[in-house]
Image 1 (cartoon, one colour):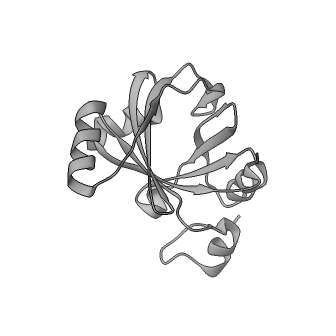
Image 2 (cartoon, rainbow, N blue to C red):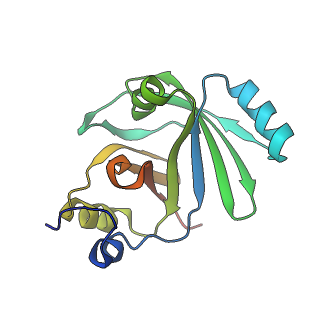
Length: 159
């Protein structure tokens, strides 16, 4: 296993093989206030607000019962996601405790999430939270130490 270091080696970049950024995830404490603020400041919207019904949930390698509210808005090819914790523990609460509201993750749409997770585990990157809902699966990777932010892989079912 190659040790991660800065600057990121070409081998690490090749193993990660990140596609273009597709999502910016932000932790919020007040969903209505966040939507109003980002709508007025950046012109984001319309927003799709829902509580995803995830299955196969894990948190730090163990089964989990977290529940979140999500708001999504498209801005060109970039999706903005707001996340409000309804029930934990979650990786979001970990970051709220350290950093408060704000940037949580940078997300990437991928075709084969399981292969990508296997590849990043080989270079010492662990999954810190995951889940599945009808039409999609996600994993958060423990990448703050190399990227300054959590990276997320998102796989959506092809329709």
